[in-house]
Length: 406
Image 1 (cartoon, helix red, strand yellow):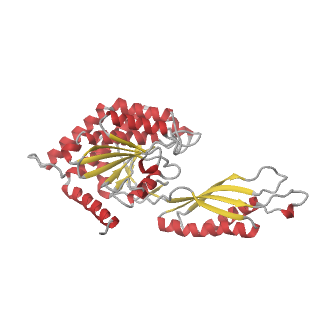
Image 2: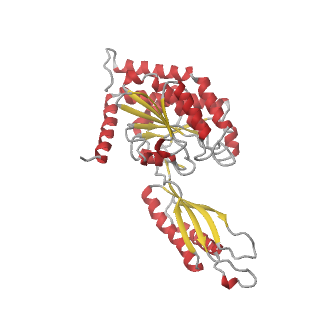
């Protein structure tokens, strides 16, 4: 269906819809803040977010959404849908936490804000010809749930996707680094370290050689290309030549093309460790590669305006680089935004226990509601601006045609 005709002007239709979504979010403030606090109180790591996903699913089912668990074959992913319009807008909810330090990236705020935006837009879905889809996206901190859901077809009919991310400040327009991860294993041969070390093949030496080679490579890598890793298994006893070592390494680069170049160079370092030591090398991709983030200019500007109207002052970070996000993969396929919503973190940075401690303060609670409202206003703008609506619908049609040329 297309957007219904109305006797009022487009501007007044937009204003009325914006007021309705704001009211819908405010009317559910207690539920949304309660969701944020509940997610924060029971943090769950990648692909273990069963309680977190259930909390979101139950809330949306109570609000009349049609909920499907296990989206894209991921056990803790979900979709929840309201409306039947031809313009499908997705809100991406994150809810995974970090090992040992809980919601140290603020995903309780992210997830609750996305749910709030979905509830806001659901209030006007029938009037604006919208289908509102909340996509529960697990494992952003690990294997990249959004990238896997994208590959599984969950976003096939989505015209635009949005989320907001917790931070120490409001910002719009930033990009992110592409990232890929490897699990690294060297297998050697054990021997007594004192009586017959020459009979062994030292897997730890292989890892040490690779680590040294990567350290030397860093000065030759382009700006913005990073390599970092940890050894997770380096042997069991100092008097036994290690026959097995394991590590996980991450590579980051400004673009997916530069990431591919860095991967070739770093792979050579791991191969050198195997060649020099005689150990056998096993390299396994860990999860999906994250692409660099490309935020849609129109949606970014409309979000900025909505945030300003809420009394917030988002910093314009166009071209600046934040860390990495699997929302980048979505943004390469369809229009998307990933602004940040700020609250007082006491100066703490992401991925620290101190950041996690600020996730349920009044400032963070306001971020949930303001983030939800601002995202919902972007959805209203996309639905009521006929030029933008047609742009998005044409994009969906092109993607369908490319999947099924016949």
